[in-house]
Image 1 (tube, rainbow, N blue to C red):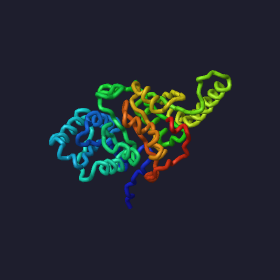
Image 2 (image 1 turned 90 degrees about the vertical axis):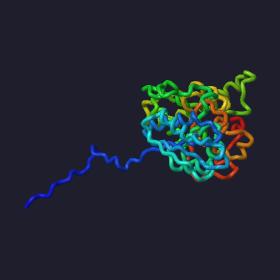
Image 3 (image 1 turned 180 degrees about the horizontal axis):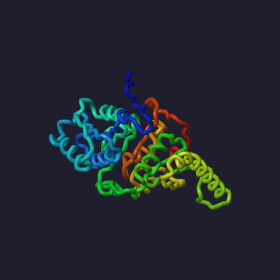
Image 4 (image 1 turned 60 degrees about the vertical axis):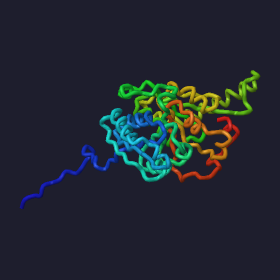
Amino acid sequence: MSTPPSHPTPGPQQEDYSERRTEVVAVAVEPDVLADSAVRWAAREAARRKAHLHVVLPNDERRDRLSPDAFARTLSAARRTAPGVIISAAPDTVPTLRAELVASAESDVLVVPAAAGHLDELIMKAFCPVIVVPDASTAVGTIPDVEAFAHPHDTMPVVLAVGPSTADEVLAFGFTQASERRAGLLVVRTWNDPFMGLATLVPSRTARWDATDDVIRAELDERLRVYTVAYPEVSVRTLVVKDRCAELLAAVAHRARLIVLGRPARGRALNAISCSPALALAHNVPCAVAVVPVPSPIHRSWLPTRPVGLADLRA
């Protein structure tokens, strides 16, 4: 009796690639909004991730003002920037915000130009990280070209903004971005105490200032410890300063590749009094800014999702 042929049992060396999901980078192109820099940034990001690029063209009342060949120019710019990337594109039949939210649910990152409409709502409701890209003519830093992106080591750091309530998902995104880009990571932690200052250099105030600064540095080191172990290849520097977060991030942006922040959690009521750093930077974007959501139901309330204090009014 002949023995049936044996079939080798798949082992670690026989990895099944058929179930791997291809990442998707989406870029939103709206009528009347200059999106060339966002399209090029998204194409480079798709090439770096070996992902597909999906171009979203929403349908709204401005569609009749869209140049007939604008979509073709968008695809051409993406192909010139990253010739090997697979690009999908189709005009959407729903309004702008809804089309972009649907794209965020189906993509790994959503890239939008800084002049995009509904930017606040998009940042607050998107299901994936939203990367806001400035137009090349208004950016503080240098918009990277294709050749710079191909350099084996990125000389411009990723900046990660960390606050008292920054979620682990935000930290992980920042470290991952720095690791994949082979870039350094600058972790920025600002703090504010409206009743603490050094206008008068007396021993008690100086001691209180130093004690607060030491506590915050220790807390930051503790938060980062697990990530520095998990990403030993990432060179990490920390910057702890008593300052307004948005202003400090804008100041360091001229040397940054990307700024990473968490989605605002303080609610629309407090944002109306003092805009969150994420929204402030998105509207006056100094370089590419990534706003990372935390997996949770969409927050519809005007109230914050975390305790807030006087320091939030000076963020």
